[in-house]
Amino acid sequence: MMHNIEEAITIHYTKMFKTDKKIFEQIMADPAQYVGLSIHDMADRFDVSSPTILRAIKKIGYSGYPEFKLALDSFVNDKNQEKPVHKSSLFHEVINTYERSFSKLKELDMEKDIIEFVEWMHDSQDVKCIGFDNTGLAAQQLVYSLYSQGVFYEAITTETQMHYLSQSVKKEWVYIIYSVTAMDLYSELIDAANDAGAKTILITMNKDAEIAKKVSKSFVLPAASTFLREDGSLRQLDVRFEMFLFSEIISYYFNWIGDQREQKTKK
Image (cartoon, rainbow, N blue to C red; front, side, top):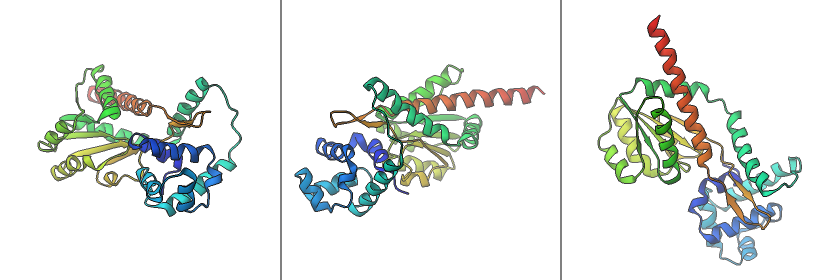
């Protein structure tokens, strides 16, 4: 199942060039007028070449123009069925965008998987929290939250560190990967962990990620952190908020399960 266009833009926003953003800003400002257009007609609308349109579309995860056309048509149909939203201040728009993301997260039933994953953490000899750039900060947030409980794990926040980690994988360790797009650069570590029999967890926003098929468990967070400003430009709110929240959830469950284990030991 493909992402809707809003999700696709959010996931791949940081990879876009100015031209890409301009294309999607105009599409998102009035998506209905672009439904049914050929790639050549769309290129004429934006005064760019057809290959430029195709590159932009592929950059946000679509295989080609036909898939993008279907996604655009679906997005417009879904929007037509929604109740009109009263435009509020920018202050409220920012908060509403985050509320929308958190509401989507709340709708997911992840507790069973979270408990199983946290049990793995408790049973492991060590846990490595991996992420780069923005998601590196989310990995560090989990380390910090667990440190406040008297547990210390390491955050791996550079590719050099990750490459070294791939050469020294331990079966008894758990590897937690934070990545919005779930890029292939994590494949070396995941393959090494699988060969060693270690547990790997992926926390991402890309439900179509290929590496998700190789990890022990994956969690797909909602991708709804972009909105269109009144001047017609796209604005991405920091997706770390959802990653931070999920790190706090993991930390809470870690503490809760630890307390349960301690109580069983005392009985």
